[in-house]
Picture 1: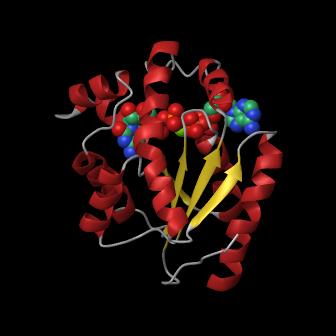
Picture 2 (picture 1 turned 60 degrees about the horizontal axis):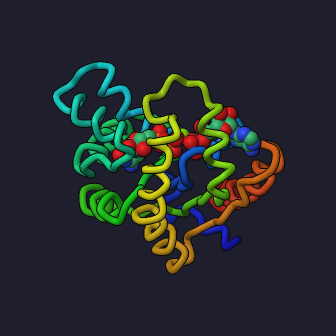
Length: 198
Ligand SMILES: Nc1ncnc2c1ncn2[C@@H]1O[C@H](COP(=O)(O)OP(=O)(O)O)[C@@H](O)[C@H]1O
Ligand SMILES: Nc1ccn([C@@H]2O[C@H](COP(=O)(O)OP(=O)(O)O)[C@@H](O)[C@H]2O)c(=O)n1
Ligand SMILES: [Mg+2]
């Protein structure tokens, strides 16, 4: 763990990557309660657009149903709007970037790069098992869509993981085990940051 920490003491940007069902949302909730970050789930922001039937709502719904990636300009705009309106400058951006297009769009539009990146590494069969028992009434938590999402994860998400690994910004977390066992791998990454930022 290289414990890269914020260059600018007043803000921290962390990307939280991992396949569907790898435990991103669950671990983000633990990080929020322990280290006081603002949790921004790209998926939740997109689902909110669907529910509020905005101009992009139908396109987003169709994209999510297919397990595909929504055009980056839309997703980055939603994330940026939340960041700009937040008085908390420590951000956990969950489920983003999910492609090189996402990553490049974020850098181009915000001019920022993440301080560090978490990657929850989970075997496919475990991810499928968790998604199918998630019971959140999501249209994409079914066996057909999960198979499509896993193909998207392999093809588009993993190149983003490689990008940050090459830059020494990636913290690879073994996402198999209890939620506590997994959080014990996450805790030192953020504790190191707290020390440096203090
Ligand atoms: N360590 C774990 N072991 C078993 N189930 C888990 C674990 N972490 C999360 N879950 C469950 O798996 C499902 C997916 O977790 P979630 O945090 O939504 O993952 P993601 O956001 O990566 O899709 C949820 O129902 C969650 O309660
Ligand atoms: N950066 C992102 C994040 C999610 N999404 C879409 O939203 C869906 C759900 O994302 P999510 O992060 O809530 O899914 P989980 O990994 O939590 O199961 C994805 O399968 C994509 O269809 C996207 O298009 N772009
Ligand atoms: Mg999630």
